Image 1 (spheres, rainbow, N blue to C red):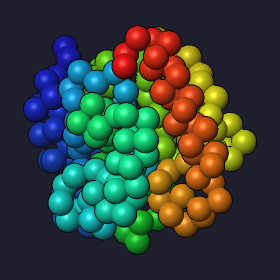
Image 2 (cartoon, rainbow, N blue to C red):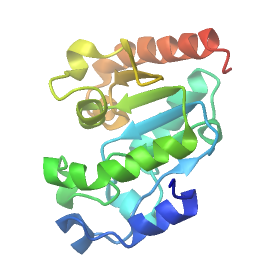
Image 3 (cartoon, rainbow, N blue to C red):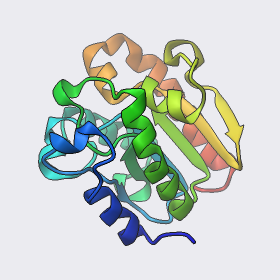
Amino acid sequence: MQVSYKGLMEKVQNCDKCKLSQTRTNTVFGEGDLHASVMLVGEGPGLNEDKTGRPFVGQAGMLLDKMLAAINISREDVYICNVVKCRPPGNRVPTDEEASACLPYLRGQYAIIKPKIIVCLGATAAKYLLEPTIKVTRDRGQFFYKKGVWLIATYHPAALLRDASKKHEAWADLQAIRDKMQELNII
């Protein structure tokens, strides 16, 4: 039996499947259009997200909003979430154990939202949604079709803040996402 969105959110809020639950301020479930055709999946919450309980609200979130606007999409048009729902201490990369504990929640979000396109923001999302050996620097910008959904990996906005030279490639990825949306008649 499929759980409701609210029921899944409550499960996440009460989750203690891994050690991240011991250090979180808030869980960061996700937000956006529950009928979105596009789901963006990042790595995990940072400090600002842990404080607010909302995904992508810090500097990386502001850049993500600008990136979406550049292809005429607003944050309200998509669904945004992360692989892990609690902040890893020091913003480190989640462990396999931590990601494995959260993946059923992400699958639940996918089952409820039913997006046509999933954008993997960064290596962690690509690793768990596409394949463990994927390299964003090598494989970004390519669409993969899995289980009825199109997936694409691109740079995480935080990576673009650290290395502005990647913005040109990220822009090409955004254009590919826009083109796929047009192809699928979802914009």
